[in-house]
Image 1 (cartoon, rainbow, N blue to C red):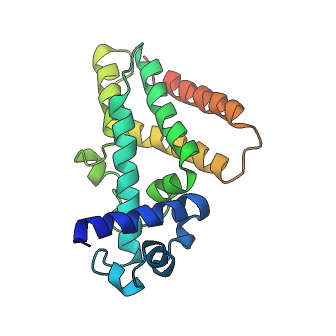
Image 2 (cartoon, rainbow, N blue to C red; image 1 turned 135 degrees about the vertical axis):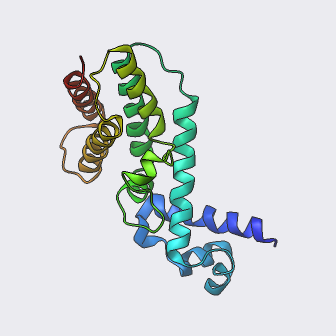
Length: 193
């Protein structure tokens, strides 16, 4: 087995464990057993368990970034910003444990506000920033610190999603989607000119 294919096999074995049972289930023993290698062999491909989890989170960010880039947005600034939020929501509902790893679990190398965001190192946040800047330039939104607004919108989005995924919101997904959408619209209307 070459190094690339074994790394892929390791990640492909770890992902279902993460998806079904959460980060706690991603142990090197379980992953190694699923791949048919020894747990020690994983260290040739990933520094440690945290390295494997970071790899999975990075894959999740690549998937989400691709979804954001693939979506053709139309309508006014509010509609387009809301749509970006809905893409995050749908990804979270489809991959709740991966989303939690990506945005909630402490992990080495995770991007941090403000330095990484202001440096453009957040591909899942950059599309929102571009719309905020566009909205400010056109006069649709009040002039303000665009990065703080993006951070606040992210906090609103992630907070609502995590409360829902954590079982703290007692409504079915369709009703939650409506609550989520209304929350975004209220926030956006609060920053309009």
